[in-house]
Image (cartoon, rainbow, N blue to C red; front, side, top):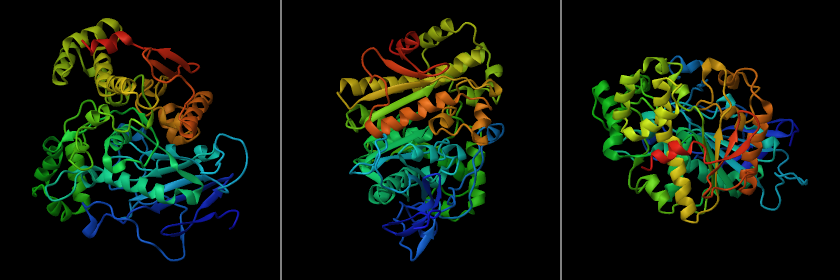
Length: 494
């Protein structure tokens, strides 16, 4: 094995990656066959074996998608890699794969801890090639880091009468199955896998925790800025039907497969382009399909699904500002519009009253944003943590990320924590959201907590209990806070 060209053998064949500073990177490794031709709109099929040594030094093709619309495109870089083989993954691993030492990532007898990253992007954007998600720092600290691609948009979450639902989730399960079968070749322990993801990736993880098809594929989970969420088949198919109407074709997989891919993407973008997780009209959803998800994931999790899985989850203090500030919604929404949107969002007046009275210096659009983000994220996470506590589940840990970015007054907005978790503050793509002076000590603290959780199941602070402890990462030094903004949380229980 060359010092500069690490090689390993997995079930499908031999791989050659790249080595830098003791970290091997194997990029663009297929975990399933290309979802084209007869396999389009079908469940993933295992990747086929190859002869010889496969070069794995460049990211593989990304799932069909379009960039974020302005002005978000400048804040959220979303590279595109052309090609059909989009069901691929990347592995970063300490190299060589075995060695002594007493560090937290010492492989021991069973191998090193493994973390599998599932990216976000509203189920229509994102990929494992985003530079912010570089896995080098995790491997540097003793973790085998895997990042995956999965089908997006109508290809991954369309709802058709003649095709399986939740194809993107099925892709994620196929990738986790690949990890279980192959990760030992990279020095990883298949029995010590942590799945972690943000936004749509976090929602995916909640669904995986609820799915009987994913049982046993991971031991720990991290949910960043997400919560259990799914829709019935009838509701989830509305976006597919809207795209079909725009294309003037039947809402079937057979008809969609006959449409030129670029034309299909254009129609999808036209239908979903104005949506966001708060002010949404047509978006894609995970579906209660009776197979991947027999019921709503929130109900399945409350009933004890994945009670044995250790869980870390949290939100950012100003989630809504990524969606509201760049588009000017904080300024556009006055008191009258606020009340209309609160009614449309089915937020009880008594809850809104508590928030308005506690936030008299904030604009109506800002209060609306906090309410909407709490309804979507913070309140469901608190409820789920309580369910797990009362059900005597494995340990649950909560965090809040609060360091305020100076960029466009976004503050601690959605997705800001990612560069801190991955310890990639030096990347230009990370600085698009953080600015140039983000605190490295905070990134070190947060990244170290994620490594510790994946390694031992304990991120370094008190597990959830009736006092509601939440580790706050910024502003300032990380500190444990009990029951933050409790009056606002209690308002939802009234």
